Structure formats: C-alpha cells, structure tokens
Image 1 (tube, helix red, strand yellow):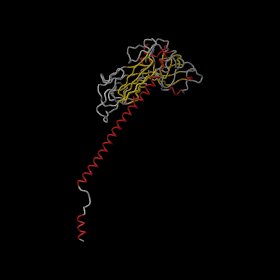
Image 2 (cartoon, helix red, strand yellow):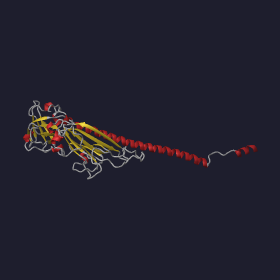
Image 3 (cartoon, rainbow, N blue to C red):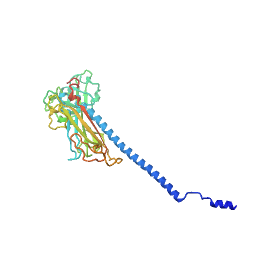
Image 4 (cartoon, helix red, strand yellow):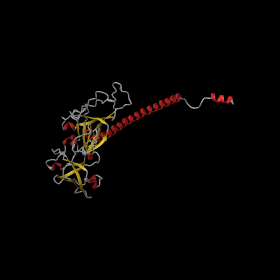
Length: 368
C-alpha cells in the first residue's frame, strides 16, 4: 500500500503548463497571420489584375467600333461630297487647360443599311421627295421599314450648292407598278444631327436637289469625356449621357452611346496626298486650315486609345524601372506625356484604317 501511494505521489499531473499554452498560441497566431497576409496580397493582386483586364476589354471594344466606322465613312454617298465624310478636332480642351486634351472625330456615311435613291423632283416646302420610277424596287425593305428613319437629302453633284438636309421619314408612297414613288418627311431638319464640315442646311433653290440622292444617314462622332460634366443641352441622361470622366462616347445621330470606360486619352492623325504629287504626305493631326479639296484627299486615319486603371496599383513596388513608363501617361501624337509615374497601370492600342470610300475608286453601286 505504501509503495502504491509513493508511486502515485511521484506521478506527474495531467494537462499543459502556462508556458506551453503561450508558446502554442503564439505559433498558431503566427501561422494564421501569415495565411491572412498571403490571402490579402493574393486578393489585392487578383483585384488589380481584374482592373487591368477591364481596361484591356474597354480599349479593345472601343477600337473595334472605331475602326469599323472609319473604314465605312462615306459609304453610299457620292464621291463629290468626299470633303464632308470626315471632320476632326485636335487636342480639344474641355476644361480650359486640362492636363489631357483628347481629339474628336465626326464621320458621315450610310454605314448600317444601304440606300441610294435618285431624286426626280423635290418640293422643299412640303417636304416631299419625288423619286425616279422603280426606285424602291431596288431594295427589299417593306414600306413600313422607312418610317421614322433618318435620311440625308443631297443636292445634285453638278449643282453649286453644298447643303444637305437631314430629315425624318414619316411614310413613303409606293405602288407595285414602280411609279409615283415618293418619300414624305417631317417638317424641319432632324434636331441634333450635324454632318461633318458644316454640310447641314438647305439650298436656296429646291431645284438644286433634282437629280440628287436620298440615303439613310449615320452621323457618328467619337469623343472622350475627361471631366464628367460636358456642356450642352443634349448632355442629359435621357439622351444617353452618363456624366462620368474617362468615358469614350459614340454620338450617333444626336444620341450619346457610352462605349468604353476607363479611357484616359484618345488621339487621331490623318494621312493623304494633300499636294497631289501621287505620294502620301505623312501623318499629321487635324489641321483647321485644310480646305475641302485637301480633306477629300485623305486616305488613312490612325487612332490611339489609352486605357487607365481607375485606381492606383498598390501590389507593386514604389520604384518603377527607368524607361518603362507602364505607370505613366505616354506621349501620343501631339498630346504630351506625364512628367512622373502615378502607379496607375495603362493599356495602349493604336490602329490604322484606310477610308476606302476616299482612297479607292469603287463602291456606291457603280457611281464612281
């Protein structure tokens, strides 16, 4: 009995000491904190890579729409009006001295639906266009398709007048015999639709439109909102304006369509044979001194679209390798570069498009 009591007294009691508990808790806490740090950094890198992916998608989608419409500028319109297919603005200041001053470009053409109807006679006061017989038979559109469509009424290319009326069709008069074909339009020009080069207006004599043409019209203007507070009566939410800085818009027949966010700069240059020596003169920004003859000889348009992450990246080191400038706004055309890095990641695309209706002597249903 005494031996059993002595052995029990010498036996160590169960459980952990306070020091063991503290050491174990410290090791566990360090492991948890390490796992959380790895997760936080991975999550930060993932979120920032998502921002980079978004700006790449924004830039690519904007480039797709722009290059498509550039190639189609002037589609379906007589070559005598080539001076009015394109109009540009160079380094447009939206803030009266902002750091980034983007370009702007306006295009006109029968881009979406083909239509080229010959005018027999025009009564401008009643907004009735008498067409040549069998005009509607050239196209497969049903008569109701024409209602509420915008059209451009161009004068006879042989006339001295250069004024195009953009109107809205109310209905068409058409019979199966192909004669007595007419287009009836709403009084007044279509509001908010201004063709390039100041072509909008009305000839003083409606006879100037006899022998002219009627086409569906798309006036598209690409511009970058750098302030989120663009001025103008049409800059309303009902008209498509979202009021955010860094949004690239396509204003189509007076309605604003935001096509890309996170855009920092948008620049355009032009190339053509301005001096008629059969050689392209080289790239240059839009020149307000170009006359209608020079503009008609434009053949190529080059564009740059620069995307920028909405937030500065924090998962990278603060020291950026010299000469890389991934985190700095670059020089584009005649738009200056930034002086320092700002830790915003950027994605740049540039593309060159041939304006085929200004550089090739074909298209427009054999008119050229």
